[in-house]
Image (cartoon, rainbow, N blue to C red; front, side, top):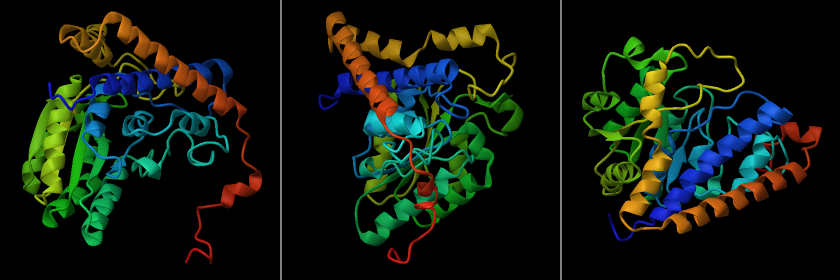
Length: 326
C-alpha cells in the first residue's frame, strides 16, 4: 500500500456514507421527516470513496440519483447535507434541492439529478472549462450501468474523446437498473468495453476493493491531467438496499443467494479486515473511528433538526438569473 494513503480517513468516509444512509432511512420510515424516496449507496462505499480519493479538492465531480455518498466522499460537511434532506434552510442548497439534488461547490461537487445520465454532459462541460481557463483540474462523472444506454452517455464520451478533455467517466455497475438486470438491457457484459468505440481506455475494477478503485481511478486522473484525454472506469459493485426506499418496489427479482454472496464482500468489512491484516489500525483504533463517525452524524442530525424551514418566498430564489447577476 502506498505510504501517502490515509487509509483510516478513507475508511471513515466510507462509514460516514453508510451511517448517513442508515439514519436517513430511519428518519424517513419512522418520522416521515424526509419527503420523497431515498436511494441509498449501501454497498457502493468503496467505489465512491476510492474514486473521489483520486481527486483534488478543486477537481470537479457530478453525481446521479444515488448520490448521498458522492459529496461525502469528496469531503463535504455532513450537517448541511442532512439539513438538505429535511428541506431546511441550513441545507447545502438552502432546502430547495432535497435528497436528489445535493451540490457543494466548495468541494467541487457540481450537483446530482434524478434524470439518468444527466451528470455526464455537465462533467464534460466542467472539463472544457478547465481547458479554456488553462487550469489542470479534472472532472469525474459518476453514473450507473443503466445510464450507459442513454444518449447522453454516448454523446459525452464522443465529445470528450474528440476534444481530449480531462474527464473520467466512472460507472458504478451494481447489475440492476431498478429491477432490470444488466444482461436483459445491455448488449455488452462490461460497460468498460464501450470505451473502445470512443478511442479511450476502458478499465474494469472490483468496486468492493477500496485500494483497487483508488489506484485505477488515480491512473485515469493522472492521464487526464497530463492532457491525454478521458477514460472510462467501471467498478463492479452491488446495492444492498432496493433501488429506492419508499417506493414499494418488489424485491423478488434478486435471489437470496446472490444477495448473500455480495454481503460477504461488504466493502466496510473488507476495509476493516485489511487494516487489521496490514497493521494499519488495531481493533481498538477501529472502534474509535466508528465512535468518531457516530458523533459526527449525531451532530449533523441535530443541526438539521434545529435548522428552520425556508420562507415561501425563497422558492423562486436561484432558478432564474437576476438582473444584477447578468
